[in-house]
Length: 117
Image (cartoon, rainbow, N blue to C red; front, side):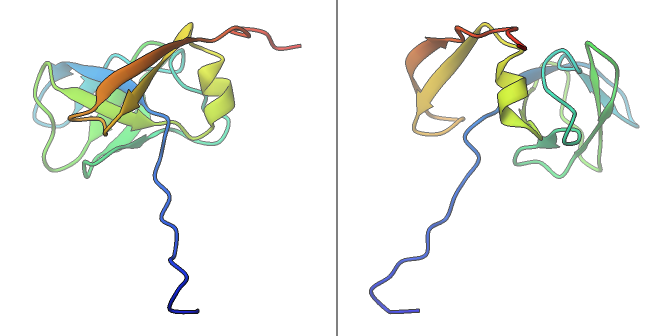
């Protein structure tokens, strides 16, 4: 590679915000299930934490890992398939500056929400 060429690094740009609604020693439950993200390309990944997401049904997800988040903590999920996930929501929140310290720039209405044909 030429020394003048920079390699691009891409990061995820779509996340589903969820919150821990129950926690115990073996797992934590979040309020984002199959109604929050598409699963046709697999279950979501957990952003920034060494956790795995497991099926908890339509309304919930189950997190497993050595260091579980506490009750009330925010957990950001990375959907496996973005466009059918967007189709499940009325609005997107456009943020500049990152998840933790970013600023909301825009609220974007999903005009085709639920349109499958």
